[in-house]
Length: 385
Image 1 (cartoon, helix red, strand yellow):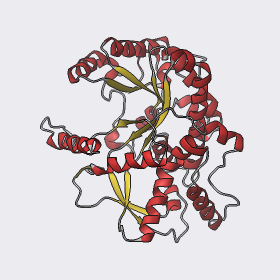
Image 2: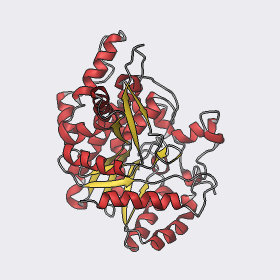
Image 3: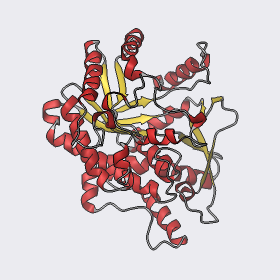
Image 4: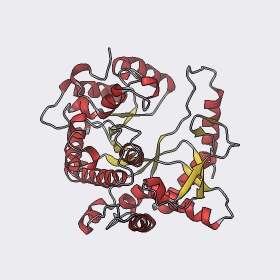
């Protein structure tokens, strides 16, 4: 059975995107079956027990629970499916970490503007409240939004992720603005309506490749690296963990570039003072997702080209001496530097590494020495004093 449209699930943007096919979709593949967890949960549970896992992170499908994205139509079979997963995990001594939203916006909400529309903030808050109310008696660790920094750039600026419509230089910032507000609203909803009784913890997860200057002795490369970290990581982390607002470097850089391009004001939206107060401090832990590292070189945007990446004025690339499979270059020390940066910059928070891993070529081999070596070296870095 294909899970994507089974038992009343509504379509999401990735269904629409992949079913359109074309050169944007690798080999015209879809997520109709994927890993098949919807029908193979019992097998997955056996693997979880065999591995001796203490925690299991999984994502809720918004359109499986609410097919049109609203609580006007609630799919009971979706609730039953996730109830079984949660109950099975707890019965086997495994702590569920539940992601409320992982890129798969219901198509019905995308048709109304998706993450580019201010209305998505309230829609997401209502969905999050539904999840807290339905599953929060057993779920104590929540991720509101998976990798909003990835989603904003790849989906709404570059258009290479679903919904696949580029809004270069504008859409990424608008989506980021609404993603941050949606997360903050849902955190406050949990804090005021559910925390006292459920006693859980809520955050969001940020993706980041650690960045190093291509030439450590170059002042311009050092500045470019700081700028890149500000744009790709601190753009989300600073408002939520520090003061409710974007990094000054990001604000000044986008404003300057916008002016050069003839815009009457910055392409980066501004938070009101009330919104800053609402956003600040809306995370109970820091969830981060690391796979690899890149080098950064300053690259001036002389042609005043319009895009998020051109605003940063950098070139990002790997060291050719690093071993890799696909985009993942094995740089174990990168995760240690990233964790140190989070500790020093964001007031020593509790940190969960919610994603890390190594890809395999297709077809995969059981003789995956590269994978276990990646994990071995990664854990060695984590265990250092």
